[in-house]
Every structure is written in structure tokens, then in C-alpha cells.
Length: 307
Image: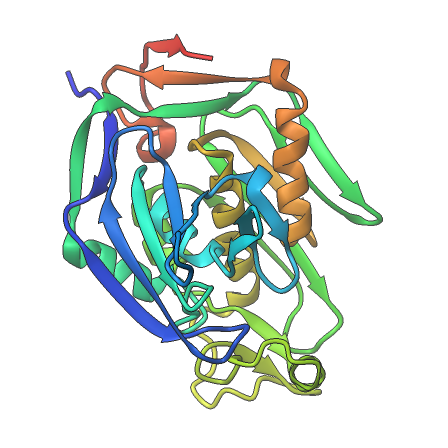
């Protein structure tokens, strides 16, 4: 019998780069954490560092990225790193942040995946917990929406629609597994429009944004000479962001998420909407033979409700 347990990182590792917002050096150091810790950020730039749990109710800003904070202390741009952690099925990590934000790296979470796989993972003794959705929960804003509905898998059905010749309408259906995440999602970069980048920088925002860490679109096409990593890289990055934002629920999810033109704000509102309807989901432990349908369509599990 395989008992599916929580995981943490196997050692201590640091990764540094430019911060998307400040344009200055940013650094994160990942450390192993005890069972049931989750993802715990610590801002190291202050004398008495505050612990900031990476949870949806700690989100204080969703402009351009997801920022979490407690008592006036914050860490910006957490979603790509958290997406990598959840995508690789890691449950518990302490993340020390310097520079006030997580480095943007190349605009995807592939650099985080690389460093996490290099340092490795350690199995822990406590069982993994999952959120199992039992009813449809939805949040809408005009024609944009995101909803979650019951499923035996964790799946994302995402559609974007941008009036630009390089994007247009793109759709992807993604069934989660660590392998499919690394292969199909992790390398997708964030993107923005050149006209917007210039305006944001004039306002002191996105000072670290460049062709090195984003797909930048001009009026007719993309400005990056190397081109796209996937033909539909834009919608794949939206899935990457959604995975990071939904990970702030605190547990992996069993359910199907359907999103249309969603972004960080709607993703966070879905988390809030879900927890306002506690009767519509359960937090369970899985004790039996296969790792959820995330790795197999044919599985038999015994569940124990814990909340």
C-alpha cells in the first residue's frame, strides 16, 4: 500500500534575479518546513521579519501580480514560485524573501522548477490533505468568470480572448500531474503590451520588466526575437498563474476549474467565494493506493474527512 504523504524540499537553496516591480535585485531562499506548514514567506528586509502564510486571505494586491502581506509587511509576485511548488507537488516550504518580492527570472516558473528538482524533495510522515469540491462555485465580473465544479481530477479549462493578431482567442484543457505541469505549463512566460509597459514604467511600475523576462507585444506581433516557446504560450501562462493563485487555498484541489478571461483578481475572488461556502467542499486525507487521479484515471481511494 502506498500512503500518500506530504513533501518538503530536501535542503536549502537560494535563487536571485531582478524584481518585476522594483527593477532591483531580489532573492528568495527556500528551506525545509515541518508538516502542515504550507508555504510560509518571511520578508527578510525588516529588523523583525514577519511570517506571511501564502494564503488567499493574505492577498493584499493583484495589480500585475499577486502580493501577500500581514501587518504592513508584504512580499510581491509570489504566484510563479508558488505555482512551481504546487506543480511539483511540494507541500511545505519556508521562503525567505529579500528585496520585497520574488525574482521574476525569465517570466515563467521553469527556473524555479529546475532549482527545486536539483535540490530534491523529502517525503514527510503526515498525510497530504486535499480540498474536494462538491458543488459549483463561481465568480463573475462582466463577461469574465472563473468557476470550480466537482471532478475526480484536478483540471483547468481556460480561455483567453485578446484583440491582438498574435493572441486572439486561445483555449487549453489541462489535467494536472507534476509531469504535465513541467512539460506543458512551467515554461510559459508572462506577457504584456509594449504600449502598456512604457506607461507603467513612467508611473514607477514594472521597472524590472524587459524582453528577458516577458513576452512583449508590439502593434502587429511579438518583439522577442526568439519567438514563442509554445504556439499558445499566452493561455498556458494564464494556467500557470491560476495554479499559483489557487494554491493559496492551502491545499491541493480536486475539482475542475473553468476560466474565461480570468486573472489574479478573479482567481483570488474564487478562493474567497469557495471559503464563504464551506458546505460546498471538504478537506480530506487520502490514504490508499494511487496518487489521486492527478496521476491516474483508474484509482481507488479511501478518504477520511478532516474538516
